[in-house]
Every structure is written in C-alpha cells, then in structure tokens.
Image (cartoon, rainbow, N blue to C red):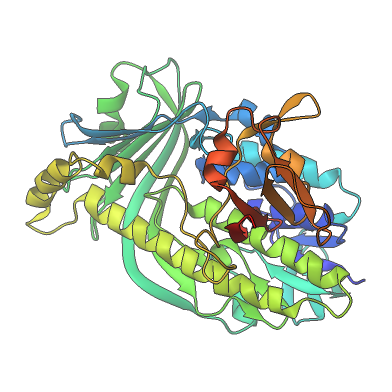
Amino acid sequence: MDRVVVVGAGPVGVAAAILLAQRGIPCLVLDRYTEPYPLPRAVHADDEVMRILQEIGVAEDFRRVSRPGLGLRLLDGRHRVMAEFRRDAARGPHGYPQANMFDQPDLERLLRARMARLELVEFVGGAEVFAVSSSIVRYRMISDGTEHAMPASAVLGCDGANSTVRDLIGARRVDLRFAQRWLVVDGECEADLGAWGGVHQVCDPRRAATFMQLGPRRYRWEFRLFDGEPEVDVGALLAPWLGEVAVRIVRRAEYTFRAEVADRWQSGRVFLLGDAAHQTPPFIGQGLGAGLRDAYNLAWKLAADLTTSGGAGDLLDSYERERAPHVRAQIRLAIVAGWAMTGGQDRAAAVRRVVLSAIWRLPGLKTLALRSTSPPLRGAGRGRRAGTLAPQPSVTWRGRSVRLDEVLGPGWAVLHPGEPPPGHDGRRLVAVTAALDPTGELRRWMRGRTVVLRPDRVVHESHRRT
C-alpha cells in the first residue's frame, strides 16, 4: 500500500495523519516549515472537538493546558453587560466542557508529540510541493533544491488558506461576501485581570471588540478596524481592560476575517481539508473545529477504502457531500453573529444594537444561543436522527466509569436498548442496560431505539426495537 501524503503539518494535517495511522494507514506529512507556527491563532474548542482530540489520544493532556470557558457576554460601548449566555463549564453532552480556551501552540505541541510516537507517520519539514495527482506528489527540499516524487494512495491538502494543493487541482475560492479587518493582540499580564471566565463581545459600531482569557495571565484582544483607518494606538485600545496592570505584547497582527468555501473539495483521490477548503469569520469559534471535523470525517472513510477489497469509493464521494453543507451552515451562522455583534458601519447600527439586546432576552432564545451541537450531516443515513452526533455520557464498563467512546471502539457500533437479540452483522454490539448506563442519560437519548453509529459517532440509522 502506498502512503497517504498529507500536505501541511498544522493541526488539521497532523490530526488527519494520526487518525489514519491509528487505523493502520501509513502517512507522509510534508510541510514548508520544520517547526510549528509559534504564535497563537485558534483559541476555542467545543466539546465535539474535544471528542475528536480524545480519539486522537491527546484530550487529557489538552485539558491540562486549556481552561473551560463560561460562555459569552455581550457588552455595550461602555463595557456594560447587555446579555449573558453561560455554558456548562463541567461537562457538555460529549463529556467535556462546552467551551475550552487554549493557546494554539500548546495544542500543536501535543499533536506533534503524538504524531512522533506513531511508526506509520513520517514527517518531512522544509519541503515545497509543486505537483500533485491522485497517485503521486512531487516536492523539492527548500534547503538544497533536490526534487522527490512520492507515490500516493491519496493526497490530503491541509496547507491552509493559501493552499498550493487547492491551486494545483484547479479549485477556486467562492466568496460568501463577508470581510472585516481586525487587529488581534495577544498579551501576558503581570497580574491576573480578574476577568469573567468567558468571552466578552463589545457590540459597539464605533469599535467592536472581543476579549477573552486564554490561560493564567494570558489574554487575547481583537479590535475591529475600518477601511482606510490610520495606524491605531494599541495602548489606548488596551487601557480600559488593563487599568494599572502592565502587559507584554506576545503578538500583534492584522487580519481580514473572510467567509469563503472552495468550489470543490476533491479531484480524484486528492482532497482539501481545513482552511484549504473553507474560511470562516471567528464569531462562533469554529475555524479550527471545522478543520478537525473534516479530518475526522474523511480519515475513517479513506481507511475503509484502502483496506477494503474493491475500495469504498462511495464513502469517499460522501466527504464533500456531507462536510460542505455543514461548513456553509456554520459560516452563515458566524456571519449572522458577526453582523449582530459588531454592529456594522451604517447609521442604523446603534438602533440595531438596542433592538438585538432586547431580542436576546426573549424566552427561548437564550437556549438557542447556547446550543453547542453542530448541524446534522445531510444524507448520512436513515431515520430522524441520521447525521447527528451521538452524545458521549459516562458509562460503567468492566467496573470503571469511562466515556462512551471507550466502549464503542474504533469502528462501527450498534447501541441496543436492553439485552440484544442473538446474532448480528459483525459490528460491535453494545447492550445499553441500567448496569452500563446507571444515570439513564444514554437510554433517555435512545428512547427505546436501536442506534447504528459510524466510526465518527454520527448516527447512521435508528429504529424501534422489534
């Protein structure tokens, strides 16, 4: 079997390689750089993403370098709270806090260390890819210009927003008509600022801003910039948050937040993942999460194709069919959230802010705002729950309290209410009894149905017991 070649060693590429290697698929990971990008970018992971990190084998280490987020506060221009949406800082439906704040270099170190322990993964840094096809990747070493050709059973383009792989397969970016300039500032303070432990969103059209704590004395600020605006005074922007506390600026960078999706994610056996396939504004914290979901969705399908006699082409074709609508739905939500929270630039912005602050207090909308579940995948199976992600409560297994996925194993699984009937199709069959599920959380979700789960824990089928 030729190796899968992964182009790009950011979190998405490394995660994809790990997930494939854990399923017995050898991988070569190529990157222009020899070391991870040292500065923070992504800062948020929800409980669904934590579940993927659990599958990869780094969730517990990640918990030690992250902190639970308490939710979202909407502030006016004078930093007065207009609305507050709290999240469960203990455990969400997937076994972890619903919001987790972190410093991206910490996550990258964990992923690189996990990758280094896997014999089936080889990493080559300082490599520049210049040609790809469904069966071969050509790259040159930046240090000496030597060129190499690597046979490939598949190619994963995980090389970011300026993806070379995307350009090489002729895919183009489709603009979803959202672009805003923002200044991002990461800093370490000499003392704790005593901030509320969630995200603060300043809904002020004159200067929309975001503030959050990432770790002990580690903070991030984001400030909206306007077209044609001259150089801003960072000290003046930070002053209302700092008081008399001194800060060391770790990073100061200007970004244009965009909403874009590639017009196609696949060419033969070449696939696009992460920022190579899509970019989202950051207002619902799903940029990195979307890329890790790509890797989780594709890895088990590609492994099945490479280890099944005759392949599994239908599975591979379902990657873009499932992921693209899901990503578009999350990008649309991020655009709406950004429009609502930043206030826009028109004269109606102030009026809109007042109206929204009142609407957000209506009964039922707080529950909607706090939903951490992502949209279902289209066409992922049969039944009302098909395409949704099964929850992961703690269960009792062999005398220990464990998370559900530890019981399910790495492949397909069937959850059956009560003791199962004799005989089944070879998929792992889990009898969901009171002994396994003493709190009843899993049985309440199943509602007496037998549920078939894919390896990525997505519901493939559910039906009443007969």
